[in-house]
Length: 326
Ligand code: DGY
Image (cartoon, rainbow, N blue to C red; front, side, top):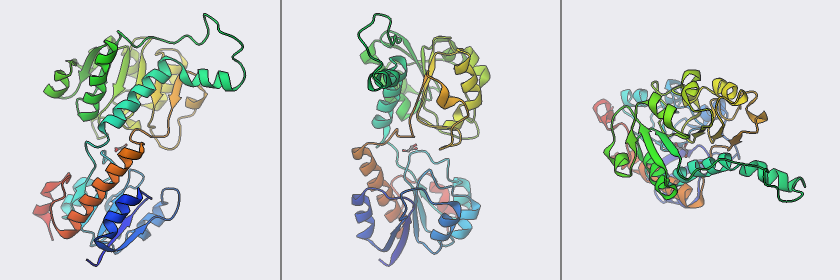
């Protein structure tokens, strides 16, 4: 008891109550927006624990501000917002929320695939704006999904869940990863090198974490390898795709379309992206269902409580922090 934790954005009440049951102070960002950097650095001083999100960059400067912090729980499966090596060097454990958002995010990758291939957003706009004046055989023609080839970039949990759904649409499924993953092959995905996957796929869906190796993994060269009728779906992290190159490829019709839930400089958009009809854009909602956000909150809270008690968090991503324990 006597613990003092900071929560960087409002999360489900149930998860806050878990924290309150064990902590003396649970302070939550009172704004309906992410904190500014200055607000964040001020808010995290003197805390035992920090529950943060991908909107907060936890780097050396933040760790200097949060001196004495005993654990950092990220409310996300991705943790590219955190300098994990710096945390480890300072003997600070860090956790994430794996597993609970896998299906929800895979579902959204499919929602984007359908939305862009079947021009769902354009059709909705047409009806609302009174431009639907009668059924027409050549009106809003889309592209089939059933029977086509889906290429998954990344062989982890979300890639596997996305691949597993392809069987329902009789698709051939390919995947690329730095190493082979028997689990995704077990749901029918065949391994390909990235260039081959890009050449063969009608739909390419990105499911890799963001790190030094994956920044701009899909750039002008890779987009040029895709079929002219292919679609790119990204529910992973924006910087995996070179957005300038993507806008050029879409504008020039070098690929058919894109469904994007994440952006290179979120929440900013690459100039020109929003003017294109052949893209569907979402505000990073891959894990945004009531059920999943509660599970993520409870998982992050459980991790944080373990860390501030000095126990191993169930989802610790840097167990070697103990070697540097102060
Ligand atoms: C994650 O978990 O990494 C998502 O991007 C946010 O849910």
